[in-house]
View (cartoon, one colour):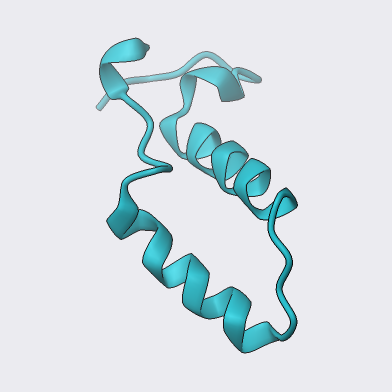
Length: 56
């Protein structure tokens, strides 16, 4: 287990993941909730959001 300093979201990989998801969602148009859900399910398989742990 790696202890992170408090108030350091830039060091937490899941925070980087959510940051990338938010950026990805902003540039897309979804016409209904189901379309959004389907795209979110496909996104991790495309490996666009996986932060590189070695960058930390």
